[in-house]
Structure formats: C-alpha cells, structure tokens
Image (cartoon, rainbow, N blue to C red; front, side, top):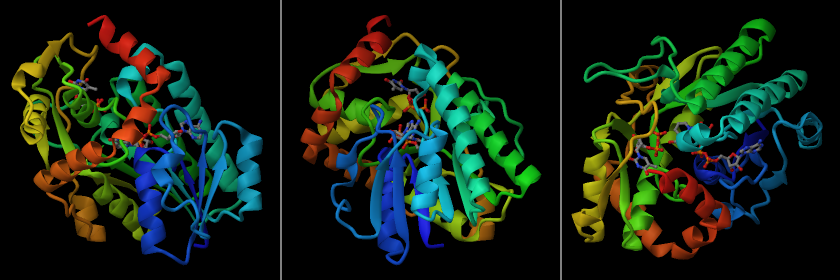
Length: 337
Ligand code: NAD
Ligand code: TYD
C-alpha cells in the first residue's frame, strides 16, 4: 500500500480518518478526493494541508473522467470510500442526490478501482442498512437488510454493489457498517453537534417524537481505528460491524449535554417526529473484536465532554459552516414541525 485514495475526506469522519491515518502511517500517501458539498470543508484538515504525504483533489465520484484521472495520475492502489450524502432528514426532503451520489458514485468508483486493480477497497457503511430493532437484540453481520429511509436504502444499495464487484470481478472489497459517530468536525445538522450549537445560542433543542429512540454511539477516533484495522487485516468479501456497545435514548443525551453546558432543561422542545423514524439501533461488534482485535477505547463520558469542549472552543468553525445553505435547510426541516 503506497497511495491511498480517501473519498469524502473533507467531511466529518473522512477528515478525522485522514488525520489519523497520516499520523499512524507516515510512510503512506493519502489522496483526499472530495466534491466539497455543503458537508465538505477543507478547514477540517488545516493542520495537515502542508504535509508532503497529503494531497487534496477536488472532484465528484460520479464523474468517471475525474475519477479515472486521479487513479492514473496518483497511482492509486487502495481505496477507502467515505464520500456520500449522509443525513437522513435531508434524504426525506429530497432523495435524488442520495441515489446519484451513494449508488451511482459508488458504482463509478468501483469500476475505476477494478480497472486499476487496486489491492483493497474499503466501503464505509452504516448500521442503518439493517433497519430498526425492537427493545431487545442487536444487529449482526448476517441480519437481513431492511433499510427504512432513502439514505439507508441508498447505502444498502451501495453495499450490495460493492459486494457484487467482489463476487463477480474479484475486486478486493471489504464492507464496514458502523453505528452513530460523534466527535470534532461533525456538521451541526446531526443530533449531538446540533444540540450543542443550539444550546450555546440558547435556542430550542428540537427532540423528535417522544425522544425515546435509541442509538449506539461511537467516538469518531475509534471508528477511524476500526477502519484502519479492516484495511490492514479484514477478509476480502466480508462485512464487519463496528459499534460502541453504548446505547442511549436521544432525550438522555440531550439532558447530558445540557448538564455539561450548564443550560436549563426548559430549552428542550419536543417537535413532530421524523417520518419513518427508526426506533432503535444496536450493533453486535463481536466479530471485529474476535477476529481483528478491535474494541472501542473512548468512554462516552470522556468522548462527549471533549466533543462539547471542542465545539465551545471552535465557535468560528461552526459559525462558518452554518452558512446560508444551512439556514435554508434548517428552515425547511424544522420550520414546518
Ligand atoms: P459527511 O456528510 O460529514 O461527509 C461526506 C463527505 O463526502 C463530504 O466531505 C462531501 O463533500 C463528500 N461528498 C459528498 N458527495 C460527494 C461526491 N459526489 N463526490 C465526492 N465527494 C462527495 O459524512 P460523514 O458523517 O463523515 O460520513 C462519512 C461516511 O460514513 C458516509 O459514507 C456515511 O454513510 C458513513 N457513516 C456515517 C456515520 C455517522 O454517524 N456520521 C455512521 C456510519 C457510517
Ligand atoms: P441523527 O444524528 O440525524 O442520526 P441518525 O438519524 O442517522 O441516527 O439523529 C440521531 C437521533 O436523534 C435520531 O433518532 C433522530 C434524533 N434527532 C432529533 O431528535 N432531533 C434532531 O434535531 C436531530 C437532527 C435528530
């Protein structure tokens, strides 16, 4: 492995992964290929911009010619694929771009990777492809796929395409499916950063439905370490669940955040539920622990506290990304609730 193409490296998890990877593997070059949509921001990587092992190339994974050029010019031998439209609420407001990018873009990338005979292609996916759980049980890698939102359906489609390229063409694909991430540089449209930013502004905290939906939360650095382990040692054609073994009801997280920020619970605003809202996600991540010796290392207490501290001390970062586009989205998503 000499030249790794990281798609979507300017987004939340991608930028944390680029930083992590350059630190852990200083001898491997990283080429970050990103379209810079509303969710992509080069400020996320200001500290590695001058690293000689790092290159940023602006481009769209749906653009076959641009993808071909980066593979050829940069002698790409490995792919870690993050680029996607990633927000469920946006997929409810408009599903088209989710199919275009997540399904169409992934197919373009798989084709080019096949053409250039890469050594490995890690496809980064989500627990949401499995659908929703009742009060008991966890998703395993053999749970059948039952995606419920347009976002989840587009990710399930791209997982199946990636695995089909492995089966049909022998492309060395490995798929990871991770639970909800949190940490620095997460766009403030997702639960944890949105609640932090609203609380800092003394604005209402919009909790969907009864607030009792459950998610399994993982600190982003732990996800990055898991992807690296899968990249190095995962078995080709296999799927690895990644999770924090850390289930929380949304309302309890909102209360925790208000406590850390010393803000009143009167800011909590129960709003109309998300259509088709999945009730509970929980990951059985025993396979990756058993076979690849990966386990989460950051406790929720420590991760949440350091995330809050990061947002408090990086006000200019989030004020900057909350541009006109963000305000327009906010009005559309929350205005009618
Ligand atoms: P994000 O929305 O923060 O970042 C997505 C990045 O992809 C952005 O930099 C954006 O500019 C880029 N991008 C979008 N369309 C593109 C295109 N057509 N061509 C090139 N680049 C494009 O997303 P994230 O939260 O960092 O998620 C990254 C990946 O991890 C996604 O595939 C997502 O499905 C998966 N995932 C996310 C979570 C989570 O909790 N955030 C959990 C599990 C899996
Ligand atoms: P989110 O961060 O959008 O992740 P996902 O839907 O992919 O799990 O949402 C996490 C949970 O928080 C989910 O149950 C929806 C809920 N939620 C709210 O209650 N209010 C909000 O404003 C947002 C963005 C999410």
